[in-house]
Image 1 (spheres, rainbow, N blue to C red):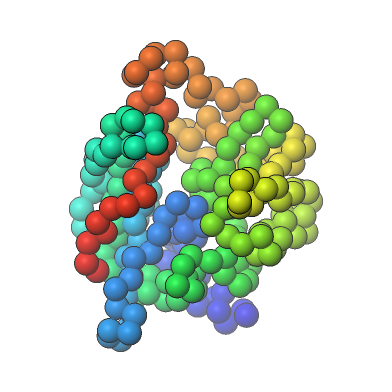
Image 2 (cartoon, rainbow, N blue to C red):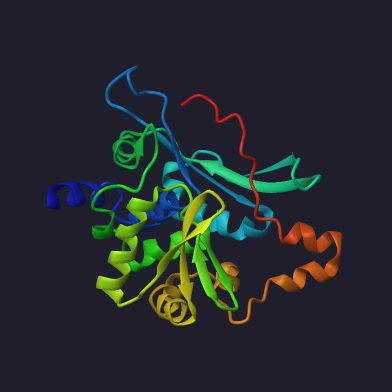
Length: 237
């Protein structure tokens, strides 16, 4: 296990936590070389809604040594909301190091890798929360819907053993997510706050300070957009 963790951490000494947190959240690795050639390569795609434009640019600044083209804006029609949405994205070059991470994070689809608790630093946890965390009056949630329930119990055990944070898994329609009560949320914030960037501070503010945007009517709805299209042409790697 130590060899696996050490090898992974050596891939991106400066950016590892940001990549790991992003992959646990909304980012994805795009790989077209499995079964086609060796070594396997992959590229990392970052994509967030217009409200998180500054967050996309922050990730770009951290990863730009692997990126050719800066973030781009995309406009698309959201059929669920009957609105034209705006979001921002960029992707890295396809490289061997990300191909190694693809084998670690994917088994046909994205998974919660074995030994993830050994590489989940406070900064990686903060990036994960900035991607998928949510603040509520009664505490907060971490949208872990894409991971199976059994794997999510490893995160519960990790948070309890490492930080003394007791969280729970709750059902959300047909899937599951991690829920934090007020105490657990406050404890989590104390761990991740040093790594939360200013534009994402609304996710840990008490009370939430981003909902005032809705007072602006249509303009507020644009500001509040965090959606990204579920179907898009990712391009050939």
